[in-house]
Amino acid sequence: MDSTFFNILLDYINIVFLMFTVILFTLFTIMGYLSTRNSIHYRKKNSFGSLSKVMASPLSPSITIIAPAYNEGLTIVENIRSLMSLRYVNYEVMVVNDGSKDDTLKKMIDAYDLVKIEQKIDPNWKNKPIRGVYKSPHRAFAKLTVIDKENGGKSDALNTGMALSTNRYVGCIDVDCLLLPDALLHVVKSFYQRSEKRVIAVGGVIRVANSCVIEGGQLEEIRLPTNWLARFQLLEYTRSFILGRMAWGSIDSLLIISGAFGFFDREIALAVGGYDTGTVGEDMEIVFKMRRYMHDRKEPYTIEYIPDPLCWTEVPEDLKILVNQRDRWARGNLETLFKHKDMFFNSKYGRLGLLSYPYWFFYEWLAPLLEFFGFFTIILFTYLGILNWDFFIAITAMVYLFSIMFSFYAILWDVYSYNEYKKTKDILTLMLCAVIEPIFFHPIVVWSAVRGNYKKLFKIKSGWGSQVRKGFAKAT
Image (tube, rainbow, N blue to C red; front, side):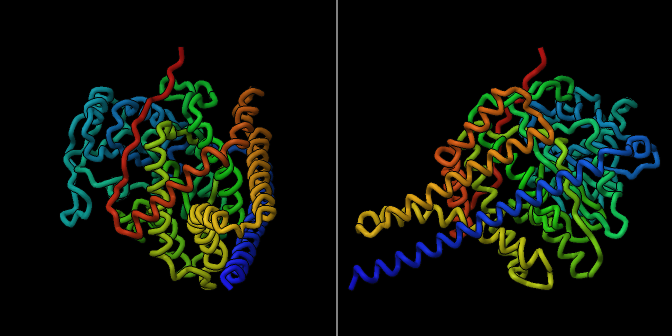
């Protein structure tokens, strides 16, 4: 009787895993097709004509780039220099020093000769207290504004920047990011290339800058990371941004814009209350809120996605920092999905409720948990002697080979599209990463997601954590 029960249970589990796997393969195949089609369309659309002269005019739309900084003394001067050298006229760089404990503020004051200015603050100010606003008397640094405030977290810092900005658009980035000189031209073009819909946000690809050569705030030479953890993340980012998010963007169903490179219509962002300071997944949560705001008012809108390699950032090279980062992403994912749970299979929100939200629920949140508990199920069934080894080996091999093929496609499509890594050795190294990633790197990601969900479900306090910057390589 017991043996029969376990055999029936095993059959049902096999069916569930097989269906889950087939649906996943189908979705990823569709993603590959959609992203490829959208990338080709994007390249054709941008292959003729140039808005550089128009967008470099003083009459061009105004943008404030908001960059929160917490203990960024190692790279802050270099990063600001990069932001100050963008090819755009009507923009402001607003660095929000979020109560740094190191010499971040001092380095900015010394490097740019900043002086404290008078700034009127709303008496009903909801953010953490502002200790001072700094500007430079030098014309060369006129675009730079530094806000020094008490520590309140990244969301609070971004909200402070939004509130103090007077420009039409705001760009919310990580201060350690390096933007290419033409970045704002692409962003503004994306905001203005639609006539029938209001573009409320623009996101883009995040590239890995580890081991790249940076000089004077400019990207001088692109190099493959020497650290293996960074290489795995580069491969992961290539899949996610070049294929995954490009595909969701092609059907206007993108639910997340990376906190490292996101631009918003300031009016809509403020209308939804800005970033939520009660979550660690603020970049995903604000997109949910803005989309719902427009849906509820039945106003035509869209979110644009830029595949061009405009933003480069440093990723963790330390295992502990990486796990903490992915732990935080998992908690933010769960917080946002729970907060907007009424969207789940809700036809009122169209593709967002019927496709995007279910995908994030099943394959971004649930999948790591199934993988984790599936591992212990295999051990249990092996112990009980009821594991169907033929089925287990077949489905494992199928998943492994499909993941390699998908990664290979992402690498080769990136080479065809942008060819950032021109050395054959670098491409082969990335392909090697694709072969060993499911064995060495993916289990770390799964464990981090499980830990994050455990902390959230059992209300274990855990904040943002911190990443120790190594700094970028200098040109010699």
